[in-house]
Length: 312
Image (cartoon, rainbow, N blue to C red):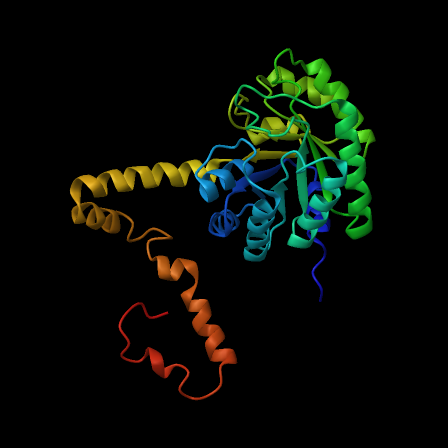
């Protein structure tokens, strides 16, 4: 049986009426960890990809090909819908048409496109600027045309940064958000809200589903409260990046200080951890099962007998 489109699967989750939690991944492994933890979807974080792939901040340095490549790897690695960060769409409305096509063919269920001036920057860092409403609505209309041709269930999320720019306001955010819905967006992503009251107002006045980014300058509201506000989706975009970075900083500081004793302490402390045996965690046993099923000859498994190392 053919799998339904990723967009269709995401829409089915959204129809459940509960806030869908979307942790952010930055590569295939972090996405698999998110899936294994029981989450029903994941994001591809532009911030995370910029940091992990380039070692650079989220200031528009990642190219379309790079973020699509990571999205393709993530979508192949997991069975849950993947929502990708398309930044400003990588050009004008005509370029956005190519952007949407590339993400659909990569296996994404959705993208979010923002109304910042290019080169963009993280929505929770000062110095943002936004384009005219007409430019953004043109991008969304172009994106809508392509997705209707290739996958009508593909979800278009319009991110609005009007609150966080110099002189920005919720009034302008709401005005833009409703224009973006009229242009074809399925959901609005009001970025860098600074209080629960601002989110409450967006929920009242924006005439469509909302995506809330629970990070940076925004309040850390529990899912129970987000359900009360009928928020469709909430992201924790950099959780995988921050947790892994903190862990590596601590590990290598100890390693530099204590040499092999730090390694021994780490191995002892993580022996019973789900990822304590990396060979087992990453799936070598599954490879052995596939070898048994598909490789010819009676000696397929003989290579394991007496061989040194992890026995899957």
